[in-house]
Length: 499
Image (cartoon, rainbow, N blue to C red; front, side):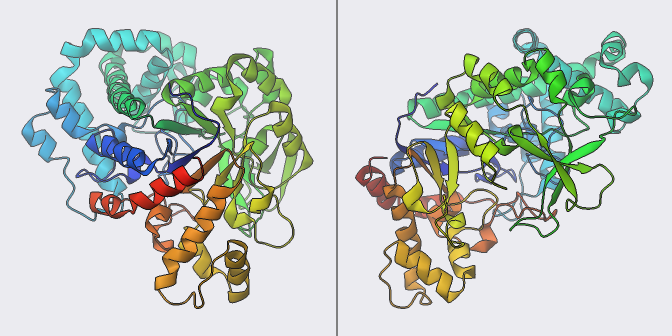
């Protein structure tokens, strides 16, 4: 684990966006080369998106497991070097399409075949190591059992399984015929863990920390809800009574209907919030620090009827607040936890953040909507992270481009940009750098810049548009693009502003 300095900078980059020959980034040489690049630029950390398996929309924020790693990140070349793949099996993983987007249809099929081939080729050799791995991490067996039963049921949600598998305790007693499939999924997680440990060690040697991300919710069709239905607000058929989302805001006129089941916080309190403690423990094994997504949901959370068509008509309910975080802070250093406290503002969120002492987030793009916003840079404190943008925002250049002339002038005047004609291409880079440098000068303890903004990319490189279900989470880059970044400029401003 790397102990981070009080003042540093980070780059936001999804592992999926890293360049590779296999249709998606992963834990191969591409990860190590990117860490080397960050080190050369003077950055101290890489912030990643959740490592969870993605949902059907390819989002990593709604997963079938809060603990398991995404097998799409397992690197084919490393498996080949370990004797787990043949040359022909490696060749089958190569992607010949665009290097700028993730082709999820291809990578799901190719990586699934790849892991199965590695299992056939090497499980017997690795069996003792796999068993030791599973013994040290009990959640692995639960995930493997869930996935094996799901495979037996042709992918059907667990609520539709036969009774002897729908109940977790009963499933554990009736799993003998699924032994090979259970071993396969244990092996999958073993490979994920082994490869990640290798790239994490390289990051530690380079002095680059990894900041992770915990989605607040899980999918209703997940091992977590299956094993612990009492921890969620479900009906007699184990389906959500109410679901999670957010009300209408600047991102969406109808709000965002996420559809995840919400927690029964009274049940969580009965055993001292052990599920959440275990979840944080798992994530702080993986990462040097971790961002908790939708932190405001712990103060109060928005619920919507499960049969609603949109999120317009919902109800706010009180979250666990300090009852949960008192338990969390007994076990974990608050400096390793980051609160994503964005979204609908309320006093209870500010109070919870103050009581925990955890760092919150500020986003420069939210600061210029009129008034003396907390997101305006002169209001940043040492106890916050300052983001040029998040995975949900437009790129910096795209945002500036979409502003009207008056709004853009205010932003650029605020940031001391001296150009005469923003519309001329030569000024685009200078104007973006003026904003970046203004953020870097602030009192914020940590500054975070998306990789796309290192490159000066426009809106077409955006990672996600909230409320839009298609064509998100697909951005990728190339080694040539990474090598073209002006690393000397970022090294200079990181040094100049003591980051």
